[in-house]
Length: 213
Image (cartoon, rainbow, N blue to C red; front, top):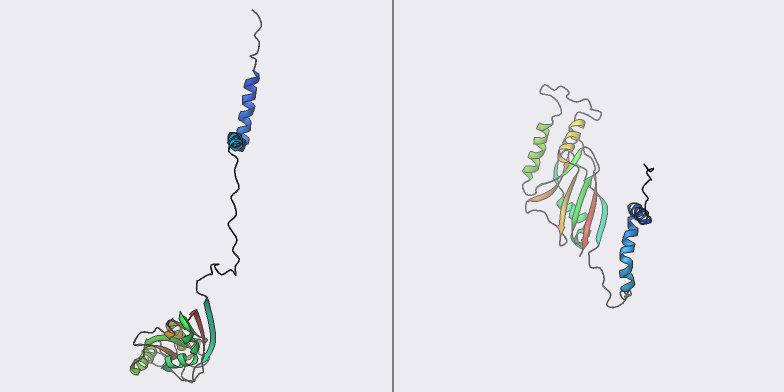
């Protein structure tokens, strides 16, 4: 029996195998070879750049979006003892800048921890008295028999209750501005609530943000 010879691999098979390996590792070559005839037949033309219009030309478009403006200042409230006080007129008087805003927001922030700001009834002053009395009942200075209720009393028995009331009511209010006026409801007013028994002077940061008229 004659000896068996190994099968001969043709050059075509070797070439095809080499091409397959190239396509596996470099797939972009296939895309290039496929699109090369089309690029030779249909050469690409560069797109012309759009005409340049100087920014200061008469017909150049200009942004029309309104610019947001800011105003910030401090207001000092009159020195007062415990109670709820209407301060709407004082705020408007101290902030004539409100009239220059077409639309915006006014934020008032009191820089103390034993008073508060709120929006509430602006007509009947009994509401303000009842509010102070109600808060005193919710956070009393002493127990029913006069016993101490709190650890923190460094400045007297009204010290800690004032902090609690401040946390319940809050240190700031935000009011919309419309056409140069505060957009308060008919019966809404800005309150300053003082929770200490002795008189204190309080400072408020007023910040206005919006579009000027």
